Amino acid sequence: MRTPLAVIQNRLESLFHKPESTILDNSENIAYSLDEVQNMRLLTTNLLNLTRRDDGIKPEIETLDSSFFDKVFTNYATIAEENEKGFTAQNQVGRSIKTDKTLLKQLMTILFDNAIKYTEDDGQVPLTVRTNDRHLYITVADNGPGIADEDKKKIFDRFYRVDKARTRQKGGFGLGLSLAQQIVLALKGTIIVKDNQPKGTIFEVKITGV
Image (cartoon, rainbow, N blue to C red; front, side):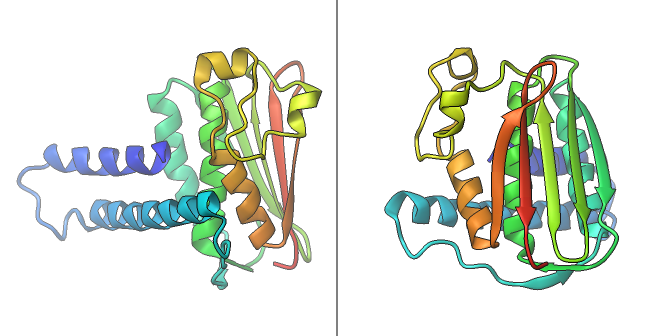
């Protein structure tokens, strides 16, 4: 939940720099903050469902265009800058898609948070989204210590923590990647993890039928 909280904090702090402005003047910042509050509420619900093994995550399908990703990436760029990391986004979505807007944003945010967490100081976090006729692809990378092959099979398990420098220094994975996998499954997709070169980790998501 670091990224939604950071977005809310940034937007609200900006209001203090404009004490003479009206609510109408600040409507964009207020709207962004409310949107992130709603995202956090759903994220909390999904986490509770995950830990309780409830009915799972139920998507609500709507139509999105490529501007959705641009808005999300604007917030990510701000967070990356605050963490002294670079952020490069490639929006190659050339058509409208049908999916769950909130779940898709949560998924990207979990992967972005994870990449920011493990990317070294002054490093780059590249995030790419693209489509073909039927599928949506999301790729997020970091240049951190990487994940051993034996751990790659387990990192989506609930509460699994890699017993390596990646965990000792940064606090492990907890529920984040497990929730990411559940979201991907709910959206009828797949998620894989592989090595980045010369070091680090890449997460690749494929969501079908969008």
